[in-house]
Length: 186
Image 1 (cartoon, helix red, strand yellow):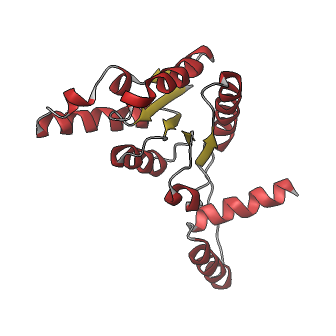
Image 2 (cartoon, one colour; image 1 turned 45 degrees about the vertical axis):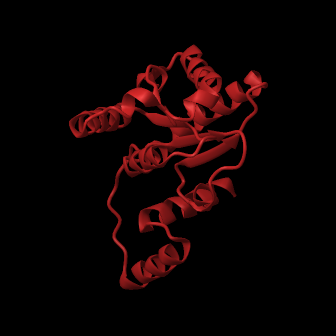
Image 3 (cartoon, rainbow, N blue to C red; image 1 turned 120 degrees about the horizontal axis):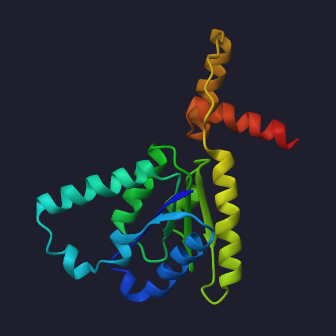
């Protein structure tokens, strides 16, 4: 599986050990991990980027997200850029795992996106972290949408979906998937 790893470059000063541990766990599970944009950089270097450097970097990172099957983020240190890449990954329908040691940002907690997963971890429990990442990868493989079909609905059904989707702040497609998932669980 191809995994895109992201975290705050500035936060690397405080959490480099965590970043490396997460990437190593991903690699030991025989996954290909895109992480150089974080692990091989310092915030001092990126602060010196020109506008063209930032544009080239953005295109490269966005392309790596597109090529990835899933995204794993260490989100303990808040970062606008990290949040932006989470949004990009979700817009490309990539399952995203946000790992954190304290409390996740409230906006993440409130997001009903079926592809967004939040997990608290302790860096002193690498076995537990490994289990969380492995579990996420298994779920991500199931959550990847690969099948498409057409569905014809009458006006009453469409209106019902419109109302319910608006109430839950979901797309109609996500609402239908959620309804099917609930039926499968029961």
